[in-house]
Amino acid sequence: MKEKSVRLVKFLFIFAMVFGLMSAIKTKALAASYITVPGYGEVSVSMNRETWSYDADTRTLTLNNFTYDSNNNGFKFVGDGEGITFNLVLQGTNSIVSTGSYGFYVKSRYSGRSANLIISGPGTLNVTSNVYDSIYCSGDRTIKKRAVVNIISEGYQYRHNGVEAEAIFITDSEVTAIAIPKVTSTITSSGLHANSRTGIQIICSKVKALGTYSGIMVDQNINFGKNSEVYLNGGECGLRTSMYGTVTIDSGVKSVEVIGGKVAFSGPCYVTNALAGTGWIKQSEESEETVQIGIPIKKLGQIDDCYKVLFQYKVPTITTEPTATNPTYTGSELELVTEGSATDGTMQYAIGTDGLTAPDEASFDTVIPQKTEVGTYYVWYRAAGACADAVTEAKCITAMIKRVDETPSTGGDDHNNPSGGNDPDNPSGGDAPAKPSGGNSPANSTGGDASVNPISSVDSQTQVTENINNKQKSTSLSKLQAGNKKATISWKKVTAKGIKGYEIQYSTDKSFNSETTKKVTIKKTKTTKTTIKKLKPKTKYYVRIRTFSKKNGENVYSKWSKVKSVKVK
Image (cartoon, rainbow, N blue to C red):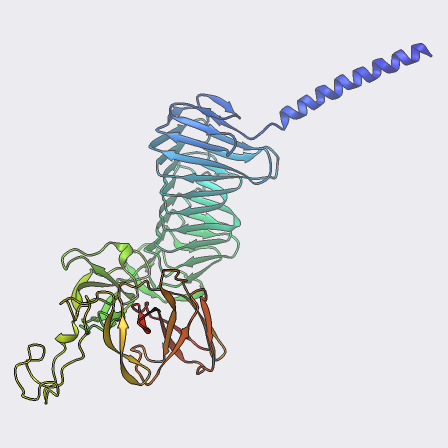
């Protein structure tokens, strides 16, 4: 019995040793994701070197003026699970020349699973491979954030490509992918090749792809988005879809040019183009003569026979120039120019500091500029198309808001000056315009109470005098929501000292004509939303808001907010 016990203990000890050894082996096999750095070796922990660094926690490799030229392999990324993502950040100019196999190889350690690669700028990456794909990724490959990637694949293996991945996304970057072997062969290569239904998406980027077979090959779908500039050229075709794929060309592209040795598009390939284009057809294979045809805007149509197609943005044209309105001061915001119009684009406006230097790009907006105060303003305008380059040259209009006493007189008896003498405020005679009783308004700079400036304004259907303080804290409309015969109005809360509430005006007339204008008074500053009911259905209403305070028992108003509109259901 004792001997059996000893044997049992030995067995258990040996089993524990073997199990521990197997566990150790398994643990090693299931180690974390790692990369292989050419000239250095395998890296699975964070490391920092002069021209490269690796963050193991985020799986981010940063290259900073890295250079490698060898007959060995380039970089290798190996993920420890499904859908693992590696990041490649470019700083400076980086160059990888691999005559051994690949430039970049990204995969999962498990068969049938994928790994992804995201390349971001602002640096440059030059990759040359002489055997296989310059960049191969078993999952999705993304290039973004001002990255510049130049790829040359000179391999001699069957179907080598500049870049091959399940899906390729290029955003705000510049990519050149060339797949042309050094030796003459029947190799079918493409500059870019995507293997999944997700396909390829190019937005706000410049892409050039060339191959002995095609510039781009994709299993199904490819999308050329806004501000993209694409050039494809292949020995057989410029672009090929292999599974009844669709090619989408956005109206905002800069240009998409596709050239093939035989045809531009090969497939079955269905094109949806929101931008009209031009196609070129060869008269015959022997002849160099071509026929040029127009390609209309279409949805899911095939473009046959053309060996070359070009889709390019149109520069808009201004058809109606805006003009200065030169309104008279009212205390409310006033439009400075009339509305212009354009073909193949929309009008944009901006206020500049002078009439010589146009404002920056971010200043232009489709909203006509409005101002309240008396003065001279420089309103710049232009027409902008769907893409960033489709913009006309900006022009300037000098506009002004006039003082109340600058309003031209209509003549007639001056009831405040029956003798018809030379009234300095009304030298031409006739009914003098209403004048402020004091304050520091544009109509009165002679002194008085600077905080209150009564001016003439329309309130309901009669002409009344209101106390306007342009320095009083104002508010602004934050949201207008249409309902069934009603509209909900929201605004920003004002907690400044002395503010008692808000006054809202709404009208079917943009100028707030007295006959169509109504008002709502909110007497609590904490309130920031109200609903106006019994409105006319399917009617557009204009809305503005201001604050009010009290002085000597009378309301004192701030300037009006910017006008917003809402169409009632």
